[in-house]
Length: 143
Length: 434
Figure 1 (cartoon, rainbow over the protein chains, first blue to last red):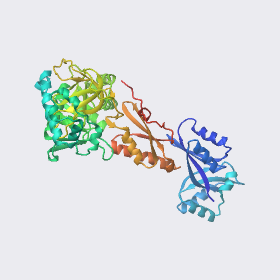
Figure 2 (cartoon, rainbow over the protein chains, first blue to last red):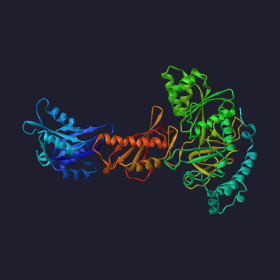
Figure 3 (cartoon, rainbow over the protein chains, first blue to last red):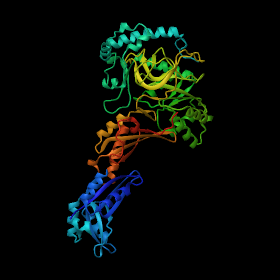
Figure 4 (tube, chains in turn purple, brown):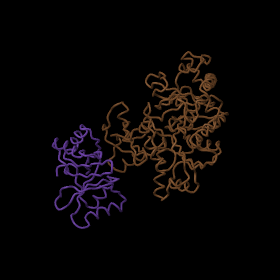
């Protein structure tokens, strides 16, 4: 039910981001979703890619600091209150969202959001019981 | 005016005779009371009785800062601990500070030397001294304090920091003399301007500035903007503290080193060979009168030259040029001595960073800034911003705690800092050179 996300440490300097995309492009790796968190000095690029292991290897080979993070992809009803219902459900169970970002594609009539929780397993349980659809990693990577 | 007329204007021949007597006594005391010196002398095959002229000084082995660290804390004391009345220490990571002890007579001598300095700068017992050097383990505050009292002046022991309050007291207490680092003086000038106080119209007339390198341009700027005479002072805690040498206000040309207490040499920092008078090289000092912790041929790492030409002020003591650099990699950040190795130790003790770092020194406005660029360690990489910021904060806090200097810590990518053992890559000093 979980997905692997690649996290990359990036210094805040011109050309660093394009270096990542170049390495991935040359290895025929597709970026499925991405989010960039930044401070004045550095940023963390978070990616869902078509081939996690390969992406990790080529980025490492090119000198990047790469981390593996477990995230959860959730289908969010594309209507008012769709996201709110999910967050309210988690909130009542005391699960904290570390960060989240939107997936680029829709699944049917629903949007897809990527979540990083402080307690991943508990979050999955709550969401499943709440009738929400969680997209498994292998499906997500090729969507 | 001259504080110790007889000693400060002693003809060179007499001065050298006094130096030799004191050197012989010092060498004998060190040999008999400090195992470290006895071992070093034995290794060099020299006995106290072999010192028959000042030239024989060159036969004695050097003492290094590392020797002080190796004998931390009291291993170089030459008197029983009972006779030590004060202890100062320089910054250092745990267990590595350099410690200096003083007997009652050492403190008295220090006070008299500092009083000499104040008078050489043009002060008398009628002056009020605003002492903005830090009080505490650092020698600056208490050193200047005792000197001002010895002179009979009025001392305002304000210590460092609290800039707005400093400005207020400069106006209200009407001090005529100020002691601080030159860069802090510029900060005070700016704070006064912002508070609408014209320092030039205050009674302040003498500034005694030291503890960090500065330039002639900076001196002219301070003199013009603060309306005072800016005097250079030199000292180092290992030797005593402030008051080792000072420029006289009459000539303002080189710093008189008090040769009845300190015996200076200039050596080639590469070979250790003494250089002829007038040459530029590393300053080596021998403390002629220190009782608690005498130092023989201490390598200061400061680069300067000595001028034996008599000065128009009447003092016969040699004048050293303002220090122009260091023969090691020590940095002086806002008056605080920082060795890159200390930063390295802190980084090594902090989980999450690799021991690869770069120090970037700059000057923003009038204050030195130090940026520590440290590589993140892959094993501790977290994809959460707050985790990395916590790491930055932890490093910043450790450096502040151990070295007493504020830094900006920037995490950089692994392997992005050049892998070279040379110091040139480790340190980037962007401050304007003299």
